Image 1: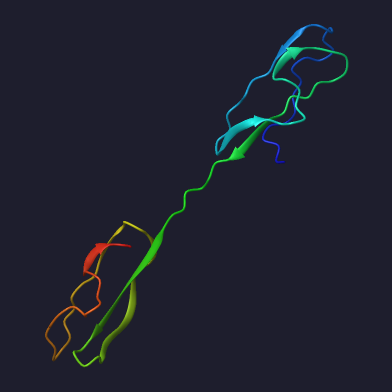
Image 2 (image 1 turned 135 degrees about the horizontal axis):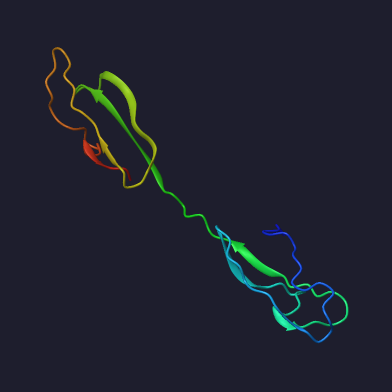
Amino acid sequence: GKVLEDVTSVKDNAPVGEDYTTEEKTFDGYHFVGMDKTSDPATGVVSEGTKHVIYVYEKDPTPEIKKGSVDVTYVTEDGTTLEATSDVVRDGEVGTDYTTEKKNFDGYSFSRMGEFSADATGQVE
């Protein structure tokens, strides 16, 4: 029901029997789907009264952007947290690159990635 362009006259006070022509237009974000069921023909002949030609458009679908998040936590072998969980990427677009870093903590040396850990660098899933 949204009007994409104001009503315009194609012919105004034209003689009956004269030909008229209208055209399908393009609008950003919309595509043509057909003539309205109450529309007069897109081209035709002027008759008494007023003809109404109505083109119907549908909004283009908005592509779904899939998102994901990546966080990092630093813990000891016994599960003690050395640094609280922090976001590396929050609601990032799937496929974008991320990087985490191996940090140094006094009195500890790096042992391994956690059992269910994502890769240290990669792409958001």
